[in-house]
Image 1 (tube, rainbow, N blue to C red):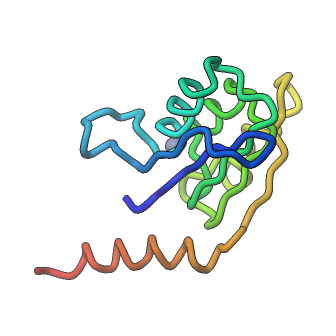
Image 2 (tube, rainbow, N blue to C red):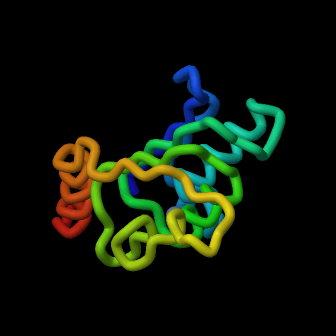
Length: 130
Ligand SMILES: [Zn+2]
């Protein structure tokens, strides 16, 4: 899956980046956001990523939205909406659930056309027999 995520601190410095590694690692939790959060926390020396922004190609799923809340990121930026599994406004809105004590700011649809195009191209190619 051509999904990438990056975590930057409050000064715009990159703390960690990741791509979807689920197939490569056989790890069902290795979504781009989780990979980027793990690397960012390691670089940060703490699981608390307060003040950080995570940007990702596709709207995060429920697992990743939960991880973003757990990491206390300040802001989530994503490109394409995921109407089939999105948990940052599409099917659920986990990160802005008022019952949770931490709610990141959301900036949705940034470079939506480009991000959606990457995914459409990937799935279009995979449907085409070699
Ligand atoms: Zn995910």
